Length: 140
Image 1: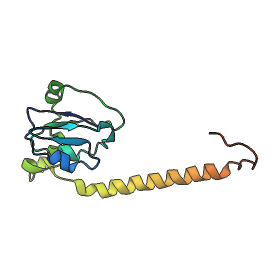
Image 2: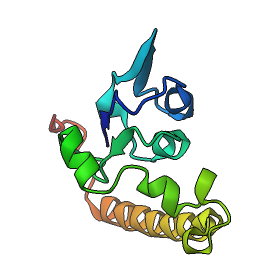
Image 3: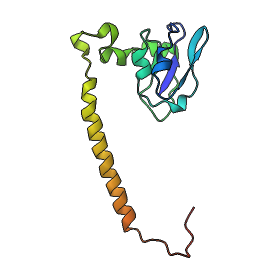
Image 4: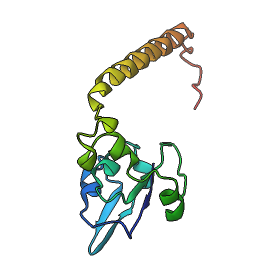
């Protein structure tokens, strides 16, 4: 989940705002963007990929906020890590940081298969449940 915009690193380019598929960030005139809808963050890391200034901290937990101070984010060495490990911008062409996003197709396929199997199991469980009698009240 997007946790932090480091104002002293931000260039104000708003590439992160444009990249976010769920509009978590709001652009501000003459100021860094603000995290306006943190709960909508999908932890997709697109904002971090497009931030050439490494001014964003995205925590890997999609379900809950994990507040962090700028000093902790800088000291932890995670700022820009996803962009670097993905081989973007100045890291392009560096064999230590090869862009392997093409492999995500395989991962999405595995996730889709697991989801489909889970849905079949749910349908089987639901179909084995006796239907409520017509005059019986359904639980709310």
